[in-house]
Length: 204
Image (tube, rainbow, N blue to C red):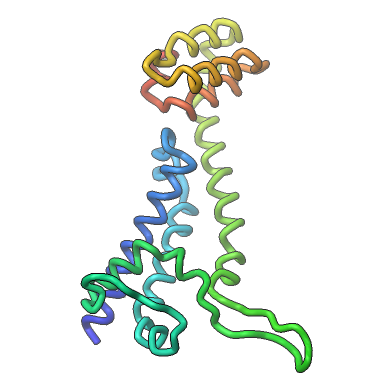
């Protein structure tokens, strides 16, 4: 029982960490520190996936016995290795069907973990994006007050885009920059693109 509980806790922390890492590396790779400091929702989002991994790990033997889940691989007979594997692949378990709702002779609708997740995930992701937007705007406010000439801002940004970046990527960013009609949007895109160090170099 202690091993089961301990391995489930391992799955919880692994899944939470992986979910958090996946979100920030795919959506906020240069500005994730704003969220880590200012958004409670990003931790709630990752923790929910940790709870799913915790529950799956506790019930994995029953899931395997009922053939709902199959686990194959080296070392998966060890509960700690199995918990780690569950934590690393937690989103694969979203397709587990908990029960089916239907009427006699009519359509049946499967209800699973994914159905439950869809109740909160869009709301949390929207909240995370809003937190990100708010903190970025607050960060650039001092620079907005100091640099109020659009062309000068564009020149500073273009001069601080590394030439070592792939030409296509760099040219696309600068091309989009030229189309900007507001300073705040130009600064925000630059901050999202290259992060705080480049931004502070361009706008000391």
